[in-house]
Length: 194
Image (cartoon, rainbow, N blue to C red; front, side, top):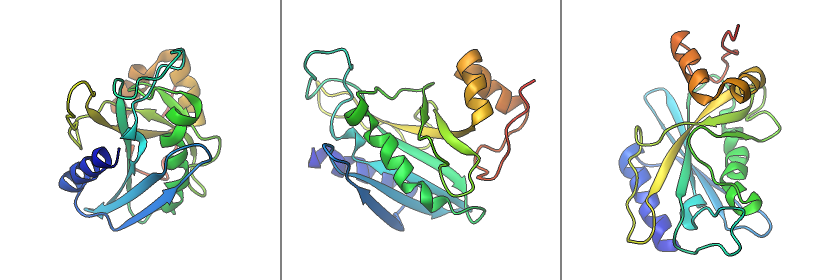
């Protein structure tokens, strides 16, 4: 486990630079989750470290396979200096612990909700899990382990989350793209959904 996390951190550093802050959260009955903060180019990136230590298991499986199964870490990018986004550290750790706590398999297209604003004053309580591979490349591990995927998180307003449940993730992403929505703006309002 420690070896995998060392490789994951090295991959994050090679893609995003040196972290300028890190915080650790431990939930009862779970492994420690860290959140690393990377700043530069007017952006703040938060990346989890610890979610990929164990593979995500199908909640219906009788016994979880200690080697096989998807592995992931979460990455959130926002514009710097517009909102107190460092408060997102605990909600991100909660989301990263959800596979251990709730038996979730986090995959692109999924919605994750923390039930409270991601940071103080945020219009977002949930995120859409986007496709990996753009910002941080997958980290290949020795067989039979699956690669670690770095999943971008896109904050959603309550209206967007409700609309996504009806129309699907692809339709919401198309709506964002068509309207030129700045998904990195921590103060943005909901995209027009009519």
